[in-house]
Length: 274
Image 1 (spheres, rainbow, N blue to C red):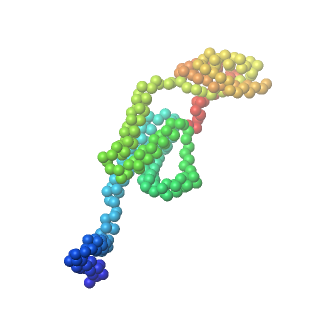
Image 2: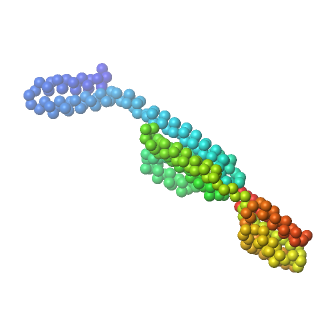
């Protein structure tokens, strides 16, 4: 006979004997029943521990993780299609899926534990995430990718009948619609700002006054940024806004028409590194 079985039999015998008494039976009966319940719980301890793992929670996490990765992939496609960066869009947007899924995993782990949250703050104060952000648009898409991960991570365990899992999807759909509408109805800008460097090898023949007059007459707005002049050479650096490529070409031809000593160099204001 096992110890659990003998203890249970003693508890049942005590209960049957005390029921025959006329006084104090209710209190003693309640104590014996409590002891019998404890013995039963101990006998079924292995079954209770086996059922402690929350399989539905794990399934909910996996489903939301898959949806998070899919939405982040759609964000990558939207950035490639609607982004205005001149280069690096493919390499930069390739990180969106990993960033969103990693954010979701971290939020799922730390949201139920204050100690883990404080530990995460301490870790982030040592290890800092750095990215080569060249334009504000890239930062906006990074925040959107992180927001998608935060939304799905905070929705783990709440079920699909709550509105929380659908908030990241609705937000992504709304912002994507805004981007496509802006791209559809945006007025095409064929001009831009340029740095114009004009050098004259014979300043006595072609000086700054003639160059300034040509640039001002063939551009929307021109500002002299730097002027270097000596007896042998004169260099003038302007920041110029052209309304169209035709206006830029007319300005270039007018500058070259001043004479052979003139050389012209034009560069986009955003630089060649973008």
